[in-house]
Image 1 (tube, rainbow, N blue to C red):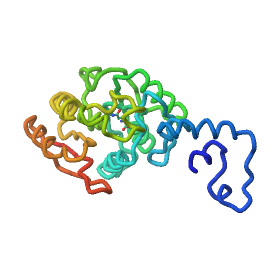
Image 2 (image 1 turned 90 degrees about the horizontal axis):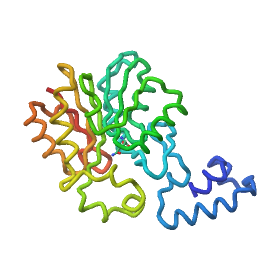
Image 3 (image 1 turned 135 degrees about the horizontal axis):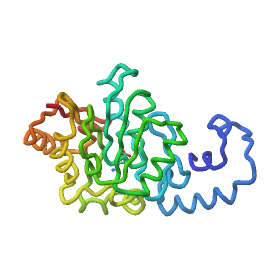
Image 4 (image 1 turned 120 degrees about the vertical axis):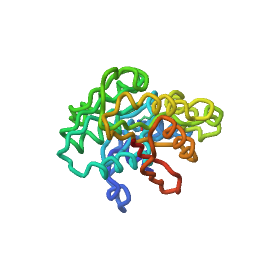
Length: 253
Ligand code: GLN
């Protein structure tokens, strides 16, 4: 239903009314979309849009669809920085569609945000999203993790890195395993490869008192906590998602 409504381009109230005014042009388009959906292509790839923090992002093959859990990360950021006129310097690592960086940037017009992603395709979407949303305070850079940020020190590093153990990807639903980019999902053997690199490297890129806010996979909190303490940090906040999984952690010194 959502698919048809998106394509026909009418609102929910009209769609569910007794006598909806449905234009007759899009019938072929609806059929084609239904065929793609039947093959389990994600709805958001078919419509080309995903909602995140009340904003619309353009997505498609080659970029991860923003997830509702990831909103918890942005909400935690907002809780930690109640002054929307503050101007933190923020890094978003593995930016994908740019959803985290752009959601923060739109809420903190004076923040400066640098966002990195190793995928040129993902960055293409991120840049397009920034311009469609009219957001100018995010600088997107192609490169792996913190590599392109030599000499930069931030108030906050945020990241939702790939965190699925490589052996588990094929057992995920086909919308994910067959359609979303593997490099946006695959966190190596135990799913923790990116956290290792990120937490080890973060010290050199954080101001004193700086914070790291990370999204985690289910059940990864304990190992992340060990990594953090080994690197001289501590977890000082854990946020659970609606299913009760520890989903977001705040790491500080
Ligand atoms: N940061 C992006 C998101 O949360 C992309 C994450 C990724 O590619 N693993 O959607």
